[in-house]
Image 1 (cartoon, rainbow, N blue to C red):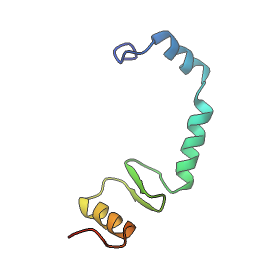
Image 2: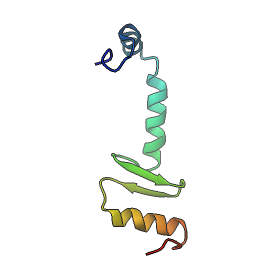
Image 3: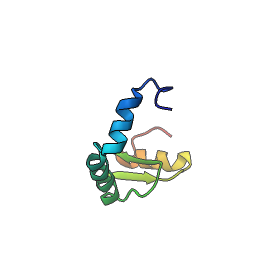
Length: 74
């Protein structure tokens, strides 16, 4: 898979074996868990509004309207 994606297979094996990015990934995971994100997809609007999970378009419209104070056209 790595080679088909155009990446260096030896480097990929080295990263996976050594856990080079493990701490950074765990830190980023904790960052999002602390903000209430426990699944995907998740969209954060302006660091204020979270829409989590597969939602209908109306949920996104409502979040955007709240963000701009209802200034979006109907």
